Amino acid sequence: MMVRFHGVRGSTPTPGASTVRYGGNTSCVEVRLVDGSLLILDAGTGIRELGLSLTREGFSRPIHLLISHLHWDHILGLPFFAPIWRKETVLRVLPMLTEAQQAAAVAKTIFDGLHFPVRAECVPSQIEFLEEAESWRVGSALVRRVTLNHPGGAQGFRIDDADGRSLAYLTDNELSPPTPPQTTLDELARFSENVDLLIHDAQYVDEDFPLKKGWGHSTLWEVLELGHRANARHIALYHHEPTRDDDTLDALAQEVQQRLVERGSSTVATLAREGWVIDL
Image (cartoon, rainbow, N blue to C red; front, side):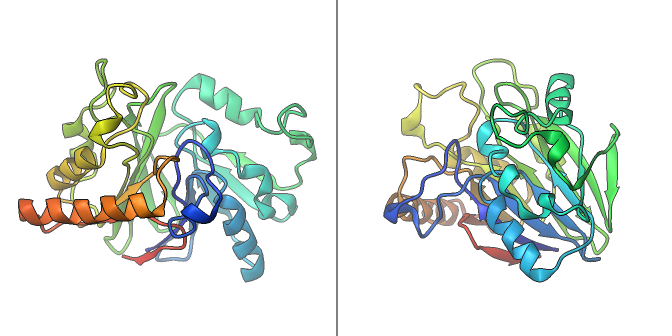
């Protein structure tokens, strides 16, 4: 399994000189399975560069899109994803978490003439919405989902490939919400147990609270605890706060390493950045 990060920023794109090292695009992760199948996790602004890369590659197989939820930072790049403007492209979209989200997704909310000038019926690619199920077989992998703690609802995914490699993608998620959680930390730890890579929303630090309590995001330190309980081999800290520049994220990366050393943890943790590739 190969994983490439195309967008790691949360809430809104952050272009500019102070964010070039980690990148300013919003959520999008490319996953290539052992059989060559392609899965895309979220369609934030990072999906634009992925689309250009697929076009250069001449990729012609079906594309599977897994959307965590319909907040703008997770779907804003979809109209600029080059493959959807080719009639040969088959884009298969996994079901959304709630009926309301599914209805909006099926209607292709962006392509309504109001939010984007081209309407859904003018998009030439073949867009298929998979039926509801407990799990889905995508190429060589089994895909499962879990409910996350986020305003409006969100879902996370676990991908288990045929060669035994595994990935969990949990964004946007508040591990310690102010109201009863949809899914507890222990449940998420079981869902993510022994994964090779855990990608988790780590937008906040303790100083961001109490102002942002209930906004649907976790702190870096909570995510490290989840990774420890799940026995994840590698944690990708993801969905960075838009106000944090590269230097601030570098400092947080150093603090993360210090805390892991102090705990004596064998888990590896990395602040995700655009262009980062992991071969699991």
